[in-house]
Every structure is written in structure tokens, then in C-alpha cells.
Figure 1 (cartoon, rainbow, N blue to C red):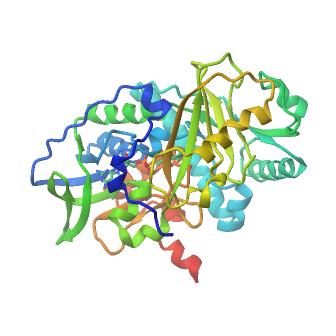
Figure 2: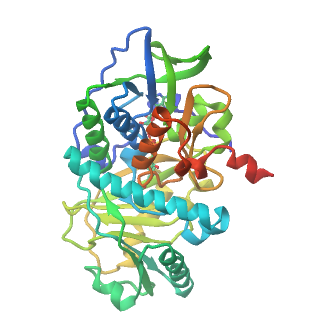
Figure 3: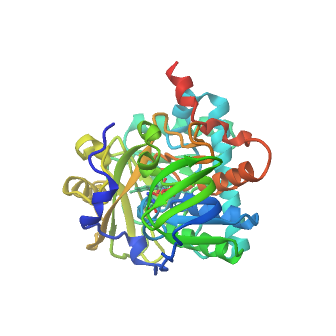
Length: 423
Ligand SMILES: Cc1cc2nc3c(=O)[nH]c(=O)nc-3n(C[C@H](O)[C@H](O)[C@H](O)COP(=O)(O)OP(=O)(O)OC[C@H]3O[C@@H](n4cnc5c(N)ncnc54)[C@H](O)[C@@H]3O)c2cc1C
């Protein structure tokens, strides 16, 4: 799909900061990129994926440079909902129907491994990012939605996850305000985690720095040009040469790899945060008032973070690169709590923000070598669901770069699946 705008002209538009961006300090990145340097591995993009990649490379002792055009976690990662749920981006039965059971199960397993890995890394590196695993509750607003949640629970149970289906009374016991009449039941997923995404990225970046082999610089990468055995990375601060380049810019992949633009469609997601209130929600929450869904949770400081309603935007905000919230989506978000919890007294809205996701045609990320540019790898297209993949992807890609062969766990994410699908 044709995008409306490119990132080059977004700088002129006021882009409100997210709650996450307003609740951290942002380390200044160095911009003293020498005019010509030779590096073994360059990572482009300082979101969760680039940070995870630099962490694993650093931990393995492989020198690398991370190039970020703005601040760490300035885009989707620093503007998201803060939920980390295992499973593919689409519902588990839909993933099984689309990808086959073997692939869907492999993806579920990978997200669970990624979560286990994250727990371990947070402990080993002493990263404080408010990570906890209270689980999540998906609300059913009619019998049809409840049946779908139950079908999904059955499919997941067969593969080792243990969701619980709840009736309205059981749902009410978990929520600190009376339910509205629409809610008929729900599904509790025990493994969902909540996190401050920017603190996580900063923690990974700091841990990577401590290994002493990573350099993080601020510059915009303009172009990648093959040059013999190497790749010339043309940046705003001059050219660099690298043996290997990892493109981890998600929604902006098409700017650096135009041949992949049709596989990573940008879409704007929007969020708002209410000022702190007394505890109402103790876990991650979701509902489907609109076809693209709504999700929310309450932070330990009482702030209510609520996102979704993308379906009410013209063309569902597909093809949009602006981090600018819009009236129609924000107004729809404001209707969510009054409809679901009519007796909840809402405080003023403290933050409104937007961020850009990248959607692939089959709702699965892409992780592969780019066939026509030797030395370049791409990872992205997370379909609004990147947090559960990043740690394990970083580890597997590091293996791919430091050991023989391509990790089989990355097979479902290869690029040529799109050619295979088209046949
Ligand atoms: C509103 C919203 C809500 C979301 N909610 C959730 C959620 O609750 N749970 C979940 O799992 N996922 C969620 N997501 C999706 C999740 O945030 C993403 O999947 C994930 O953050 C992608 O990480 P990334 O590192 O690949 O990309 P990004 O975080 O977008 O990072 C890409 C980085 O590349 C940099 N960059 C781009 N182009 C260049 C260039 N030319 N040169 C140098 N640097 C460049 C950017 O500045 C940016 O920092 C949400 C996304 C949005 C927008």
C-alpha cells in the first residue's frame, strides 16, 4: 500500500510524547561519527529490536555499532501499550489456520522462550523496568466473542498454555469497579507481562555498553550500498562501511530496503493515559469494541494506559507515518471506559500519543538475510506485537552471525514464505 508520508517530513509536525517518554530521562547519544569508519557489524534502529540485538552481540563479545536517528525507543517501542503477551499477533486458531499447526506452535514456543530469556536477562543484568507478570484478561462483549475466546483457549491448552474461561461473575471479582451490561465473560491468560518499554530498552543498552564492545551513535541512515564484500552505510554524518548490517527499523524498513516496502505496511496506533486513580485493574486488559481491538492496564502509579480503536480512523490509519493522535480515534478511546465500566469516575486525560507499527501480509515478523544485498539482514514487521519476540530474535540472530548455519527457530520468519504463499 502506498504510504501517505515519509519520515523525512515528520520532524516538522508536533508529535506529543507518550507517558513512557515523559517518565524517563533520555540519555544523549553521541553524534561524533567519524567521517569514515570500518565496523564489523552495524545495527540500524534503537527500538526494542536493535537494543536486544546489540545486547546479545555485546554479550557474545562481538563489537558492533548501533545507529539510531533520534533517541533510544523513540518510535513504536516508546509509544506502545506496555503489554507483552505470548502467541502470534493474530488469534492462535487464526494463526494455525493460516500458517499450519507446526508453524503456529513454533511461534508460540518462541515467544515463551523469549519471555523466559527476558526474565533471566533482567535478573542477570539487574535491569529495573517495572516488569511483572500479572496475566491478562480479555473481555467478551457477547456470546459470539466468548465462544471465540473459548476456542482460542482450547487451541492454546492443547499446546501447553493454560488460559481460563470466566463467566461475568468471575470477571467482576477481578475488576475494582462494577461491570457495564455488555460484559458477558472473559478469558484469563496467566503469562502476559507488563513493562515500561523505554526502561527496558535503556536497561538493555546500558548492559550492552558494560560489555565494552558496543558503540551507540545518533545518525540517520540514508542508504545502503553494496561495495565488494562490504556494505556502505550512507548516513547524515558521512559513510560507514560494515561487513554486516542489521536493519531493525520496523515501519521504516521500506526507506532503506525499498524492495521490501510492500511487505511492511505502516499503520498508526493511538493511546491515551488518564491521570492516576485508585487501583481498578490489576492485570493487562483487552476487549474488542472495534474490530482492531482495545487494550489497557493500570500502572503502579495509578495511571491508566489505554490504546486501540484504530478501526474508526479513515482506512484504519494504514499507510500513515505521523506520530500525531487524531480526534476521531482519541474520541473513540474516550468512550471505552464509560461503555465498559459506567460507574468508574475518570480523572482527566494526562497524555495522548500515537506510534507507527509495521504490518506484514501474514501477521508474522520477517527475519532473514536480504537476498539481493549480501551482508544485510532484516528484522521487523511486528504487526503491533513486537515486544514478545525481540529478546529471542536478538539471541538467534547473534547465533546466525557467530555460528555456522541459520537457526531453524527462525524458519517461520523467512522472507521467501511470501513467494511460497503467492504460488
Ligand atoms: C500505539 C502502539 C501500541 C503498541 N502496543 C504494543 C503492546 O502493547 N505490546 C507489544 O508487544 N507491541 C506493541 N506495539 C508494537 C511494538 O511497539 C513494536 O512491535 C516494537 O516496538 C517494534 O520494535 P522495533 O525495535 O522493531 O521498532 P521501533 O521501536 O519502531 O524502532 C525502530 C527505530 O529505528 C529508528 N530508525 C528508523 N529509521 C531510521 C534510519 N533511517 N536511521 C536510523 N534510525 C532509524 C527509529 O528512530 C526507531 O527508534 C505497539 C505499537 C504501537 C505503535
